[in-house]
Every structure is written in C-alpha cells, then in structure tokens.
Image (cartoon, rainbow, N blue to C red; front, side, top):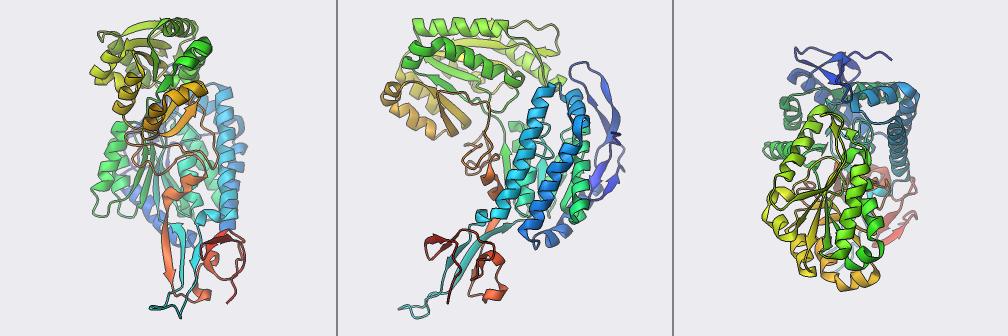
Length: 529
C-alpha cells in the first residue's frame, strides 16, 4: 500500500509546509520512505475548524450511528492486513506476534466502546421528578446526563503504535462520547499512522459521518503540539508520553484564556514490594517473573516494574542472585527508536556510577542500538539519599533495594511520587503484618496488585490505568477501559423542561432502555405521570 506523507485535514490531504521528516528503522538505521510533511499552523487551524463544524452534527447523532462508525473503523483496520503489521514492524522494531496481538487488542477495544454507547448507561441519566406541593418550597423537575465536550486533541504514543496511538483508547473514547478528534501522529511511526488514518477515512465515507470527525497531523517540532493545544476551539487533550512533554502540554492548556483539561499519562516506576513470607517461599520464582516483566517489550511499557524492595538477608541475597542470572541470560533488544535506546544506555551508565549502586546482572548488547537487560541493587539509605534513583528509566532495567525493616518499607513508600501501579508479593500473614504499607500504597497508585506483575493492562470496565501526579495529571480518570469515555464528556442538568424538548435518554419513555437513576432508584422503567 502506497504512502504519501501528507496530513489528513478532514477529507482532504494537505502538505503545504516546508518541513519534512522520515521514519527510521530502529533495528537497521535505514531511512524509510516517504518523507512526511510537518503540519503548518494554518493546516492545524483548518483541521480544528472542521472538527468544530462536525461537532454540531455529531453531538446530535443517535448513539447507534456513532457505534456503527466505530465498528466500521475496526473492520477497516483489519482490512489493512499484513501491510499495517509490516510497516509497524519496520518503524518500531517490534516483533510480528506482538503487533498482531496489539492489533487484536485495538480492534477489541474499538468494538467494546461501540457496545458501550449502544447500551447507554455511561450517560449516567439521573432524574428527580418535580414535587410541586412540597412544603415550604416546591421541588422542580431535574434531569442530568453526560454530553460531549467538543473537539479533542489526541497525541499518539511511541510505545504502542496502535493501542495508544491513532486508533487507540484516547481517540476511540473521545469519538464514542460524541466528539471529533484531531490526532497528532507520533513521529516515530508516521507510516503506520497514515495507514490507520486511511482506515478512518474509509469508515467515515462508508457510514456517512461528517468529514471533520477525524483529522491527523504530522510533526516533529514542539510547535505543532503546542499550537494544537492552544487552539481556542479545542476542548480537551489526551496524551501518553514523557513527564517533560506531558507537563509542557498541561501548562500550555492551563495558560489559555479558557483553560482546558489535559489527560496526560506521563510515566511510573511501578514499585514492587516483596514481603518476607513471599521472599522465603517463592523468592526464585518472583525473581524470574520480575525480570521477565522488566524485559517484556524491551521494557517499553508504562507499567514496567523499575523498582523492587525486599528485606535484607539470605533470602534477598538468593533473590538477587537469581534475578541477576535471568537478566544476564536475557537477550538484549531493539528499542522503538535509536534516541530512546541511546538515552537508556546513558541512563544505565549513570546508575552504574552512583556510589552504593551495583549491577547484579546485565545481558550482553551486541551493539549500541540494542538495550541490555539490567538488574541493579542498592540499600535503602542510598536510595533515599539519591533522587536520581527514584526516576523512571524507560527500558529493560530495574533496581532492587535492600531494606532493614518494615519501617524502611513504609518510609520509602511515603517518599515515592504518584504511580500507575504498585505490587505486593506476600502471604496473607504478610499482609496482616504490613497493613500500614498497604494503606500508604493505596494513596500512591491507581492500581494495587497482589502476587503478580504490572505489565499487561486488561481492557475492561473495572480497570483503572491512571494514578496520582506525576503518573498522570488527573488521578480521577483512566485511559484504559470503558470509564475512559468520561474524560471527554461533561454533565448538564435540565430543569423543568417539557418532555418533548429533553434528550432521548432523559424523556419519560425510556426509548433507549438504559439504566437510569430515578428518584434515587435504579430502573429501566418508563416514567408515568
């Protein structure tokens, strides 16, 4: 399938700018054709204007029509077939099996949101009927639901070319809520993004959706993203990436005359606490599982466990020996792009030079373009004294910290910044003896695991993929699962409106058969009187 390198401005292709860039195969260093055109400010303005125009149509469409569009997007993605997988492999270095799995997850996620909006309960329809003879004051009829917010800017992530990029959860949840999107493709995989954009265009045509429902722009400069966020008609932002980039977008959005929310997922060290009972009983298995989790996807998951803590002693020494062996025998891997690998190698070199930190296992790297699996260790005092040891090192490494007591566990947990996840390995007796630790960690994370590893994020209604700052900019929301839709909707209350003028979900007759909270009781019944 031929690529052209243009921006998708509604239904039109555009390449009016003079700045171009190319994708690079991270494994070979080969420059991949074609050249991609960085969007100009005028092109971005056009995309947002089309989105604002489309919003007026889109927000009035029935849920079934939006759901049918999402289902069609999923089908068009599948129709891209091996071309999509081959281009993604060339741009990311990810293996075919991983990309096939990611495409399956992405398609399943799209269909999940289509089903969600058909079912309709996400609207949170709530009705309190009037009591005109209430004393001393009558009660008005009040009806509340969620509605879409307007054009949404989405930033594709580097580490998931599908599931967190152009067709990812941010884009699909924003569309499902009834909003048009303007997606900034990640420059590490622009060809993959273009193929996906073509699938969106085909779906828009097939389902007769307004052209401005989807646009996609390219860019390597910060100006592209900042101009998009600052545009007065953009009403929210979805982002997955680094703390530095996420914070820059957040600050730009907050400085607007009309501030808007930025839902940014920005990084996490995902600490693992290995309690004494588990360390004694299952230390070798936990060590092997930890390194496997750390090296999964060459450590390029936002839930990669970059820190682990255990009590000093013979059991921890055996744990470290096993973890070191597994890391040493692990293959080095190709990271998503060469600068990322260079930063990782620079980071592990820096940790090796920290006094009190030592390497217990490191795989051989055949060249500078491959990242070695690395396990470090240090003690609690060194860890607490060096802020650099608290920071995320994106790639296949972890730091195991030797603690002297449960007090060390708690002190360290209190010192940790906000995280996406934390994990506890233990027995029931361990949990009973470390209740304070469990309580502290609940205030630090969005997901708390027991006897598992954080890599692998299930896409389902109960998942929460978020956490306190700096893991995200808003711990109240998730970027994975059906609850992600609520980032891109807002409540509105109708007071004393005639039934015929109300949105369908709030009318007396429950035509959509959705669950509604009526006079504080959950029901699907029609209202009488």
